[in-house]
Each structure stands twice: as structure tokens, then as C-alpha cells.
Amino acid sequence: MPRPRKRLAETAGPDNKRLSEKCTKTENSADVGNCSPQKAPTSKNREKTPHSHWLMKSEPESRLEKGVDVKFGIEDLKAQPKQTACWDGVRNYQARNFLRSMKLEEEAFFYHSNCKQPGIAGLMKIVKEAYPDHTQFEKNSPHYDPSSKEDNPKWSMKSLILF
Image 1 (cartoon, rainbow, N blue to C red):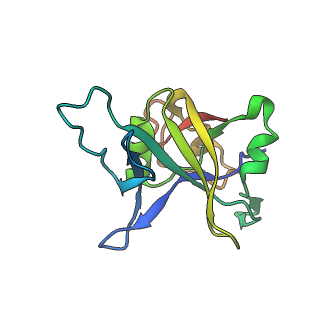
Image 2 (cartoon, rainbow, N blue to C red):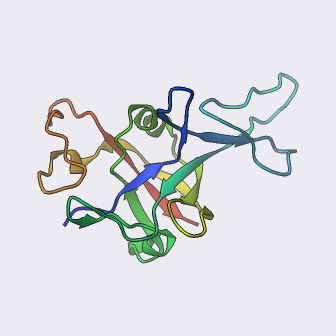
């Protein structure tokens, strides 16, 4: 059975293409600052680097894509063994590159989108480095990509844990 669709958060850029966001905050800021594709600059006289948080977009309400329900919300993650799941189905090159640049132990906001009450629903942590997204090779998957080859996969995914 194909896995549910989960994606990095995307915002419209100047050419209406979708871009992923990385939100950063410094240890002294009260809220998230500078949501942009780059890390916030670090100060030379600061001992610690800023905390980085990724914004991971997912759709908690049912939506069929190629006959498959791609719904995946925080409750679905909670129901997974050890509350851990892979973040598959990312099919935007910019988002894929951000996904690949995520480091172990970095934190991510679980963001519900395309629903009645969009917003951050929880906090997750990266628990596995990027690896090939198996759904790109499954012909019955809504994420199938016939141009991707097993010896040179185009798409990656990460494993995350809810905490």
C-alpha cells in the first residue's frame, strides 16, 4: 500500500513556484524569526549557534490522488510505531534539496495545511539521514516518477519522530 503524502512546507515565490521554508530562531528570540530558505546569520560574539527548525507541511484531511488517499496528519504520526514515520512524496526540487540538507537531531514543526484550521500541530525531530524515496519507483503510487532510475534516484525522504 502506498505511503501517505507528506511534504515540506511551501510558499509561493515571485514566479509562483513553490519554495520550502526553513524557520530559524536565536536563543534570545521569543518567537520564530526569519522564515526563509536560508539559516539566520550567526553573530561572531555569540557562543551558541541559532536553533534551526524546519516547517514540514502535511494534509490532515482526506484527498484522493490517483485513487489513493494521501491524508497524513499529526494523529496519523502518533499512530505509527514509536511515533516515527518517513516523510515521502516530496516532488519539488527546492523542497527535495532542503530535505537533503536536514541534519540528524534538527527539529521540525509539523504543519497542517489545506484544512479548516491550518497551523503548527506538533514538533518533530530528524532521526535518519536522507535516503531514496521508494514511492518514486512504485507504479501504483501517486508519487511514481517514471523518469527516476533506481541507480540514480531523483527523490529523497527523511525519517522523523514526534516529540
